[in-house]
Image 1 (cartoon, rainbow, N blue to C red):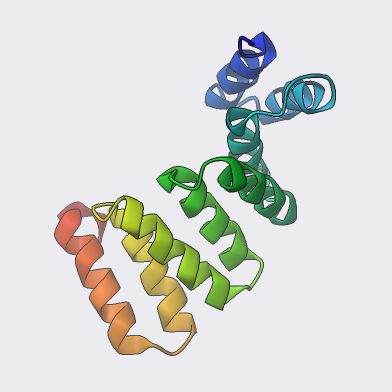
Image 2 (image 1 turned 90 degrees about the horizontal axis):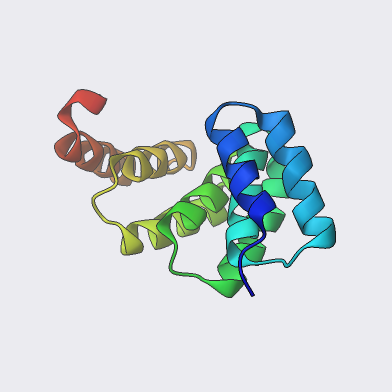
Length: 139
């Protein structure tokens, strides 16, 4: 079955910064259309943008149940977990994201922040250093 054209429209709205329009269109797809991994990924990402982290966690987990090999979705799940104060699970999911893309400076930086909050300062320093090594201007 071809992808629901409303998914493409929701993606275009999201890229244009029209997040409310993107979410309204995506809700239609979720209600009436086929729930694909792409739909769940976009819903997770969009809910992070809208700061609805509980919804982001739900949609990211649904996407990962269909395809666990997505660095972006693992990263988004970790970020949402971090934002809701679930630091230990966030740490583990950031590590899973890094196993998929070990050269992603932002993931290393975010892992460093979580490790620092957990009191794992030496490991946090190592993660921050890796982020700066990968993207020297990122510091």
